[in-house]
Length: 171
Image (cartoon, rainbow, N blue to C red; front, side, top):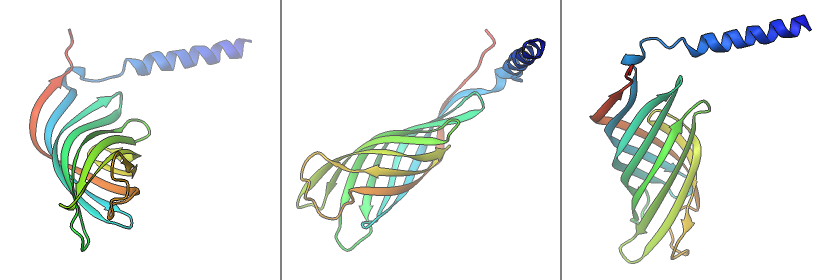
């Protein structure tokens, strides 16, 4: 019985100690927003390049970096048939498991017909780098040729300019 009490007192002491060991909390950024260049490459039967611009927010939750991004981007088919997609969406990456999740809506066109797709994504990512699997859910024109149903994407967000920076305060 005495060993159990000693064990739980030791666990409680460690938890209380580690909860109060954050150094210089007044100088740690709470969140940083930046204008960022969004780039990507889609891998499957039909390959696409992505380029766009967005607002990227980096923050720390405990010791884990979290990145979110809202973006507008273009997708271009890297094949003989020209296909262009205008994409609007967002994603979040990071945390303890470096998980990345996103949701985008894309309007593909070959300038003869259009196809609207909703793409949920899941994968891994940290800071501005991510590798995800996405599935294009047809919202119309499900027989549009030249786009993938499922695809892997590698994305990199490159910081361009700061928008604002918030800091912890000791109030």
